[in-house]
Length: 471
Image 1 (cartoon, helix red, strand yellow):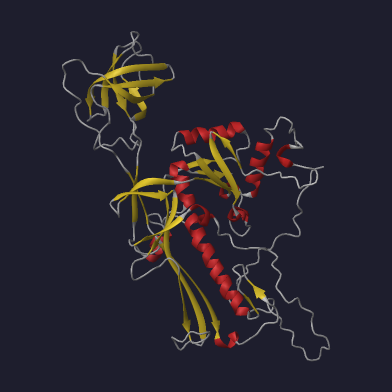
Image 2 (spheres, one colour):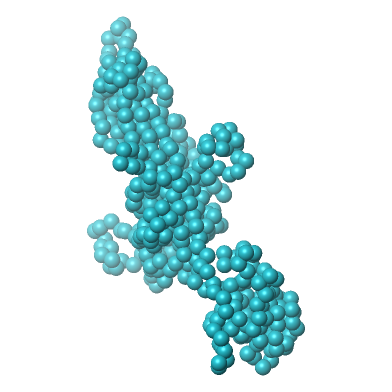
């Protein structure tokens, strides 16, 4: 029979941080009439393990300083010219034709520069009816048309007005003629991103700092002690560390006429481009569930072939996606059939059977790892439907871009964080104390305030090499 996980008891979603010390968090039983003192465990039990979700950027990105309020870079466009929305004015079997280009969305095509096809070039025209080869003998930049003469004796194979694609594959000139007329200029893809300022603060009054708790508290970064405010301060720091990562993943730019801009003014909240936003708009998206068969992964590989063809790729997936990959790889064993082949991979009866795989090769190398952020029920792990993200494929290594601030080519990781810094001010991770308690003595406030600040942005280079897996 099919099993299931019961809905009750469930995982806790009650917010951990509170702005005040509550009786539910600390022992408050000071009844002198009671003859019994409560038995207490000396140390707090870590029932949710390591609660931090930060890990992704530490694994795949570098951090570089930036002095500017705007980060710009140029990525290479395609080397060859191809148009996919063209029509012919001639009938079937015509020896010549005038081809009209309608690819207004193509980066190599614009109203200012016209089509990137010149007289003397040889082109291949492809449609559902077949393929023609032709030489270009006339170009009209004003009307975005060019005239061709077919090499085939039968002339044009596709119907008048049918949509065809065209790409340049070479050139041919007669003896004793002039050279190529005109030139094609490179059309760079220029991208930019602005850093955002992140802040947080923890405050505790001087009187409350004098209270000693009865239970030893600890945090993920090793802080421990019997002073309860230490736990809250360190949890604020851990939460801020998580936000430094999740904001780089989830952030979106504020759109024109949006409430974020209208409520704060033109120089107010502008947002920035997080990884998910960039990949969903400039990268590749797999939708409709996880790819679970080799045929489906072949579609992924086929798309990567058309992009940068990066040899090694890391997949950061949620638990279900990881299991789907394990099952797919395991099913390639001829003796699998839902079971296991004993004796292979040292799967001895005396040892624990390893049912997981670290990756596989199918055209390219794919290495997978569980991403806690996608599993955490208080973050992305609690979303369903269109909002659910199952995994992110990130290319490994570095790429070369033209840094418009440096004014030269530079090698950069596909993902890297830029933080504001100069010789006098480093805003990568600032923390300082204010008040008159806990060692602070710079104001008359009877409290200790711990302030956190960072100003940063993430640069996603070559987004066409990334894959986002969604439901």
